Image 1 (cartoon, rainbow, N blue to C red):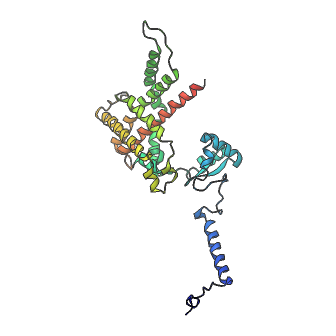
Image 2 (cartoon, rainbow, N blue to C red; image 1 turned 90 degrees about the vertical axis):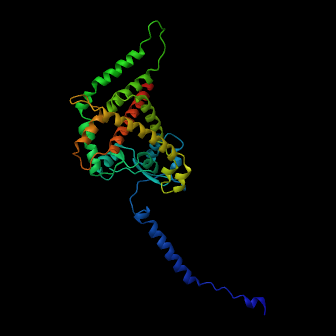
Image 3 (cartoon, one colour; image 1 turned 180 degrees about the vertical axis):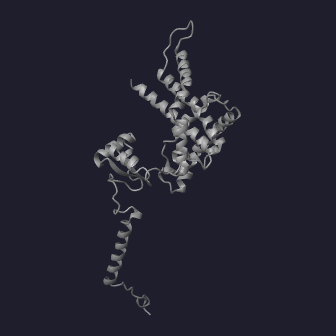
Length: 327
């Protein structure tokens, strides 16, 4: 038997069968890509610059400082624009009107904060007032901050602390008897004075390792704004394994918690007498001991408030030093 007789001829489906199938597949793809669940065009999304595969608009921010790059993009695309940074979708508001719509008119829609993978490593189980979802617990923490920690009376009570730190600053600038005058870095001295004054208001002057605590806060502040692979690709487990940032954050968190545990234990053992001056940690411990909150104020909540308050203090002192360096 000839070889040609053993091979059965391949019969292709007629064209009138392929065309409807191709049309159905194309229609399903268009419907799926335009659905709101898949980021389709049915949503009225803000304008965006041109994007690259995988990284999205990340390359637009690589050629200049991020805030200047976003300023230039907003001049071309308007005060409200959408950026895709790898897997992240970010809405950028670059005008006072757009910011007012987000922060006042639609405050509840923007009340929550997305938690990144490294943010979960950094904060652990206690999210605090910064990253906690909007709800009863968050409103309770905010009430403590506004009614107990940030009142005008509380700020005035820290006047002696500020006066003592300014006096120490002036004494450090005076030359030693018999020594020749020497140049000093006034910006660093003023920034340190601001940081010491505020940290004393947060944790008091009884904590012996306040300087080490400030240095640890500074290291932590350098880690927080750094974007890494796990934050840009939050759905990728490989990014968490490859990046060294989660390990560094775990180490910093462990050291920070050891410091904060020591601070809390010291305050619990040496509670101020009735009528004495309270620092912010004393206020939180007093509220916790009263037991009138529901849900109750936990030790982790107190530690998170202390860390966030101290980090804000350090950010302010760095801003002061940057502002002074301009003049």
